[in-house]
Figure 1 (spheres, rainbow, N blue to C red):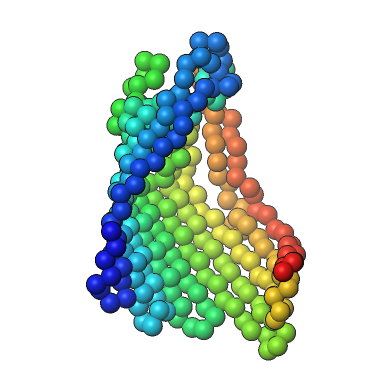
Figure 2 (cartoon, rainbow, N blue to C red; figure 1 turned 135 degrees about the horizontal axis):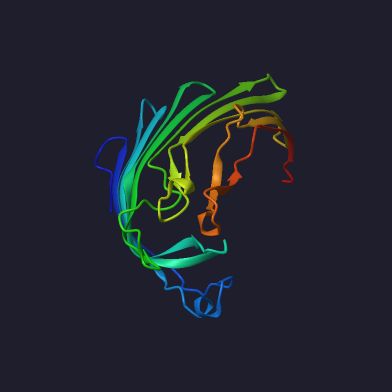
Length: 252
């Protein structure tokens, strides 16, 4: 349902349902688990949102409140022999708010910022005798931010030089339903930058870019080794400071 009775603003309310097919674990550790089906996952989502434009469309403000109710949520779990299998949680709820602001204060200069708050927990989840009810969902940061600035500089009739800087940040996440601190990854902050040249006809682009410029060390996954008698984890780290040069060609 959309309402456009406000000047330069749209308010909407939506209800949607999602479905993920059931399956079997092809890498289950034994025949019993291989023959146990994974139930289909169902989700019901309600959104209340705002999309607005101000100051002759030089400022955009968007916001959304949402809640998602999951039934038989499909969850990745690591077995004692370190295999990753999928199980069903009983019920889970993910709810929060997302805000976005996009501004063009000067010709060629674009600024944007976003923020999201997420409260995502298992309502009921008992697996192999362990009760994970009330724990946070995996890979669900409570807070996430981003800031970006881009500027396009016209070079007479030669083309355009484009600059962009991005800042992204997220808070702590868990990689296991148990919310064990061994499988928790601290929050991180990344800074990326890019400068590119494109000729007037737009037939190609040459870009110099850098990612994770502060060389932040952060984990994108942690595997708990306590089942093997070790109070440690095997971590998969995000990319370190990286630079590159990219040439793109438009075939049209």
